[in-house]
Structure formats: structure tokens, C-alpha cells
Image (cartoon, rainbow, N blue to C red; front, side):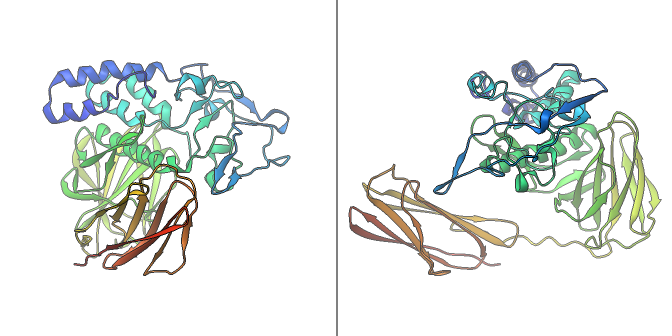
Length: 441
């Protein structure tokens, strides 16, 4: 997947903009190259399977570096950290997983290494949205549904349920190569799939604007949340992807939450091939009065039906692999607070021929604070070290080897930050100062 075929997913963006079928046809043809690299055997039966025979399972075992120490979560391994047991075949089946490249798929020490990084899943679902060929939906779902409850790591070898634990990336043991720099991309394609599925199942009654996140290799997905979208009759809905807004008691049901000035929305997606009953219980953080009259939308009839909440709970029944959207009336109108515009987001300082150029980025979040990332673009050089102090903290953050980079977080929007870099090369000192201004409304 790193170099076997072109990155075809952008063709779907062009198709949606132009409605020219040549782009959809090209995407469909190219998507089969992705499907060719996805596992399709052995057949999954309604049966049990033994995993961790003899209380052993190795997974992948490379010890990586964290700072100046070698580290792998849960290592060294301890006896009994995995247990032999019987689990359902479909829980641990590799069907639907892809590969990175032949050299890792057939890695000598750990043969048949599939990967969990299925960024293509929402893209395959988009093709299905327009051509209605079930093969694209099937492979999209097999890549992602039931694969993780948190970040599962990267490589999938053999049969294990350890990466399915909700606390897996915190407690380990790391059996799959936990690549911390992959977590943002894993989250991106997970959210992309949920929103894409809502848009596809609703037949256009739900839609949200997006930006395109183009990472390296195939880590390419749509990122939502940057603007207002539509949920049935409400054309002012904004995705509100916060935890602890609603409790959903059926694991077969995925959901999205959104908000507009007078409505709080819960979009429910039944992933089961059977009808599902689900209770939606709003937490007190959602400003909806108990026992309110709510509206339920579905594609069977886009005219809503009215229901009465039982306290803070609403029960709905979903058809197999269907979508419904519940609109709750807000007791207090929601007023969106927009972050102040960031006018100075990047600084470039030319240092010299040895240290190269200093780049400083101020990155604005929607959470009430900024981050700063700074780096020197010099290649590795001998007898060099660089340190940073700021007006926020006089604690010296030293880099004694390449890469020379620093990150700061949770900086108030209006806080001016003065970065003082002390650079030493072969005993010669040089100071560089960069001032990054904040902004306020």
C-alpha cells in the first residue's frame, strides 16, 4: 500500500464537486487495488477459537527508543500476562485487514503481519455510497468494525484479543507495536468512517463540511468539525464530539453528537444485521430538560415523529444497519464561541549555514489554548546542542542531538511567548530569540 497504486481517494472529492462520472469510475477501478490487498480468508464461522495456547503469545517484539532509553510497554514480559482461552472466531479474525508492504507482511521473524491502520475504510464506503456495489461496503466494514476499543497498535499477527482492551495503549503488553505518532491518524479515519457512514445511510439528509488531511503514505482522510452542516431539517448543526454527553447502552450502535442553537442531536447507527433496541441517556452536561418532547428522524420517513423522554432517557428501535437521528430541544440556547483569529501563526528565522533555519509555529486549538512547535532544520551535526527557555518557564529544555525540536502546549490565546534558543557548536555559542504574539477577541 505504500507504492503499489496511486492514492485514488481524492478522486471522490473531485467527483462530488464536479458530478463527472469519469472520476467516480476511476475511483471505483482504483479501489479494487486496495481491496486486492485486504485479507479475505479463512471463512469466519459461528464457532470458538483457541487463542494464546499454553498462555503464550509473542506478537511483534521490536524494542523501540523513548528518549535515550529503549522502551516497549509491558516489557519485559511476565508469565501469565496472556491466558489461553476460547473466543468467538469473528472477534479475532484477520479478514478485512490489509498490509503495509511485502517486506513487512512476510517479515522473517513474524510472518504474516497485517496492519490495523485501515485509513481506506471510509474511502471504500464513499465509493459504495455512489455505486451501491456491496463489495465496497463489505470490505470497508471488515476493515474497521469491531477492530478496537482504543488505539490498537499497528501490526496484527496471529490471533489475540489483547488489543481490543479499552485500556490497551495504557497497560499493554504491547503486542502490536504501539506507534504513538499514528494515534492521531487512527482517530482521523475512525471519525471519518462514522461521519461517512451517517452521510451514506441518510442518503444526503446528513452532511458536514470537511478538510482533507493528507498524511504520509495512505494516511489520508477527511477531517470534520470545521463548519456547520445539516441533519435533516436542521441546517445549522455542528459536530460536538465530546465524551460524557450521552450514554448509549448497546455496543452494536455507534453514534455521533451535534448541536445547533436550539437543538442537541444524537445520530445513531445500527451496525448489526438484526434490529437493535438502544437507550440514549443524556448526562446533566447537556442542557435539555428531563421528560422533554423530542423528534425522531429516519430515512423511512423524513417527517419526524414525536416521542416523550422518560426522565433523561429515550429508547428507540433501529432496523438492521440503519440510521436514525434524535433531536432534543435545548433549554438554554447554544451560543458558539469562536476562537480569536491567529494573525501570527508562523515565524521563520535564518540562523546560519550550520544551524540552518528556525521554524516556529503557533497552532490554535478550539479548546481555549494554543500550542507552539519549533524546530531547526539542520541535518545531524557533531558537537552540537541546543536548549530553549521561555518567558513562561525558565526551565531549560535541552536537545543534545538531532532532531532539534520543541513543543509547548496549553498557552492562553492572548499570551505572548518569548522563545530564547541557546545554540552551541564546537564550543561556540549563539543566541536566537523569537517572539510569538497571541490574540484576543
